[in-house]
Each structure stands twice: as structure tokens, then as C-alpha cells.
Length: 286
Image (cartoon, rainbow, N blue to C red; front, side):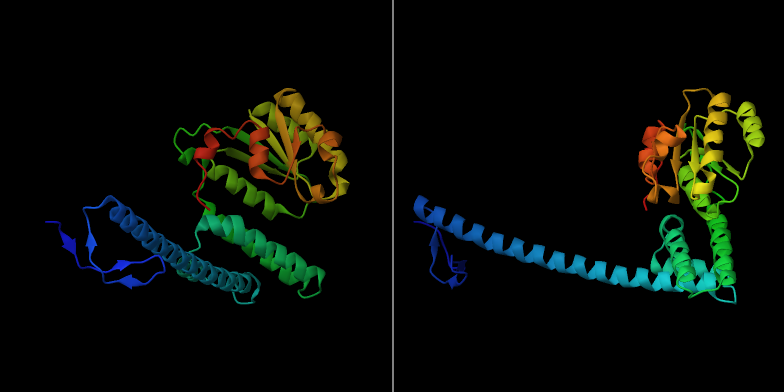
């Protein structure tokens, strides 16, 4: 005697059938398998749709939180009354903003907004200067423990980062230095040296590579001298990268300066400098 089950089975049309299903016939068994597969497919599609909606909702909420934190952070650096670092940290925790995110995303974004406010006459020079100084102070507070030697055995190399005299984007160089250190790269930041200062530095210390941060066209000649001085001190094979705002208006900077790469992409620069091996494994989640 064949066993029968009275449970309803989902039909191809999506409805339910109350007819008993036998398990002994091959043809009937195949029909049940096809109907069950259809039902499972519908469930999976429904589940996928629910997950997609939840992800989209989370992304929307996350974007709102990030916009809210950006506005708060802009206020922190531009208001007359300074906000305590403890209050900033509390707001970072609420918005789930890590120190790395603050350094890599929010500080550069707020710095750009300050520049836009200045160009649009929405902020005075004093306000922009105070804001930039606060950004740099905040970066110092959150990054003072980011040292290459804290990443034990990283061996990611040493870089000389040079910012010519007269450049206004010292904050950008500090952000770059913090990013490099988190990747295990030891960085020496040299701001506003003359050729003699730079020559003494490269003769006294060893560096695996060098980076130049350049924004003003007026500094092209001095940067050419810097490149020659670095190669004289460290050897002609030393790799040199250049980045900065000047790349937005110049396309042949690498050839003009005689460097190995001109880029705004840190990963591209590290690869060109031969420092993307163990440094990648030390990269934080941002």
C-alpha cells in the first residue's frame, strides 16, 4: 500500500492543491519536484528582494548620517567657539566614523568645502585659516599613534615627502603622511626646504623613495632642482613621485620634472615607488 500525504502542494500557478500526492510513481514524483522547485525559487526571489530593500534602506540611512556628521564637522572647524575633542569623539562614535575615515574622507572634504566657501565669498580669510588650522590640529590628535614602527615587521620602506616653500596645502601633505604611516611606510615630512637643506638631509639619511607635493606653477623650477638634489644624494635609481593640485592643469609634469610618476592616486604612487607589497597588507579598512 502506497503512503500518501495530505499536505497541500504549491502548483505552477502559485496556488495550493489539496489533492494527496503519492510518492511511488516516477511521473508524479517529477511533478512534485518541479512544483517544489518553483516554490523555492519564489521564496528565494522574495528573500533577495527583502534583502535588497534592507540594504538600500541601510545605505539611505548611512548616507543621511554621513551628511549629518559632515555638517556637524564643518561647524566644529568654522564656529567661533571651539568644540572639545571629547565631544567630537562622541559624535564620531554615534555616526560610526572611525579616525581613519575622519582623516581620509571628512578632513579632505571639509578642507575642500572651506576652499569653495572662500572662492564664493561665503567665508572670510580668517575663518578659512582658523578652519584649516583646526583640521590640522584634529588630524594631529587622531594620528599621533599612527607610526610605521607600530606595525611590527611591516618593512614597507621609507619615504621622503617634500613640500616646497610657499605651498598652501600643508594639510594635504599631513593627510598623505598619515595614510602612508598607517600602511607601514616610514615618512619624513620636509616642509619648505631650500636646496641646501634638502641636500644635507638626503646625504645624512637613507630613503627608499621620495614624493613631492606641488600645487603652484611658481614652484616648478625649484622642484626640478629638488629632483636633481634627491637623485644626487640617494642615487639615480631612487624612485620619485609627484602629486598635488598642479596635476589638474598640467599633463606632462612627470616628464618636465624627471620623476617616475605623477598621480593623485596613492595606490598608483606606491606601486610606482615599489612600496605596494607589504604596505597593502597593513592598509586599514576605510
